[in-house]
Amino acid sequence: MIDRVLLASPRGFCAGVDMAIKALTWTIQAFGPPVYCYHEIIHNQKVVKRFEEAGVIFVDDIAEVPEGVPIMLSAHGSAPEVVQAARQRSAYLVDAVCPLVTKVHHEVKTRSSKGYQIVYIGHEGHQEAVGTMAVAPESIHRVDNAKAVAALPEFTEPVAVLAQTTLSHREWQSVLDHTRRRFPDLWQPGKSDLCFATTNRQTALMEIATRCDAVLVIGSANSSNTQSLVHLAAEAGCRRVLRIEDADNIPEDLSGTIGVTAGASGPEDLVRQVIERLAPKHGVEEVTAMEEDEYFPPPRNLRDLLATVEAAAVVALGSGLGDREPLNDRSISASDLLERLSVPS
Picture 1 (spheres, rainbow, N blue to C red):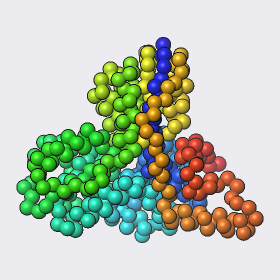
Picture 2: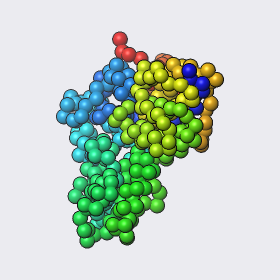
Picture 3: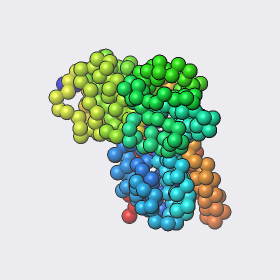
């Protein structure tokens, strides 16, 4: 029997994911399906499926996109040549890259232009890492452990260190320490590259992990920050830690106190469904580690387009567009918007 659920807060959608969800939803509303998106908009299979049902086509190559249709670029950031190819091919381009990833791309560009060799701490094959390394491929070297740091060349140029934003603090710190020992004059940015939301979700999880008989982390296998939460709960000493996609993945043999959290790409409706399935005898205790108020508005060109469309509708019809969500309204929940995403008839 499940006695109680400890619910970590913050959890689920971060500001970057919130922005990307709203941007893709409004792009569908503005243009109608199909809308093409380069790579999965975020790393969550449930979210991707909902958008596919609404008419979004996800591709791994811009060449797969017919000329003259709207294209969106994912939240993970894209290589400069991909952005350029999308601009040339699309009728309208919306770049939903997270501003924190944009910051790292800018740092890569700036350091490489100043003659630095860049040690980039990131996961092999992750879309964010691939896009970041493509900014200055001749100057950047990806590492993810001490062995990789030891194998780096003896650089004659100054050395900088940057990171994939979704790393856990422990992943980052361990490799950073080895990098500092290898390159004592290492340059690093004054403000950490690590996503504040990733760090906040890890902090919140640590508040509950040691009090739980099991922890459920809601998120997809290809989500780096979700996997970091799984590893962190296990390192904290929780005896049983499970990553689940949704309530259907909950094992039947759980008992005692169950911790619940969600990766930064996990919708809140999935959290609610998990708690309903757990049906704790003594209810749910939400444990809040800190409050988040960061907000990233959708890309400016999309906001300007929809504002123009809205104004034209007011002039033509004497009223606003009936079922369109108000643009750039922080009170709108991306999870609610996603739940209401209708399947085209």
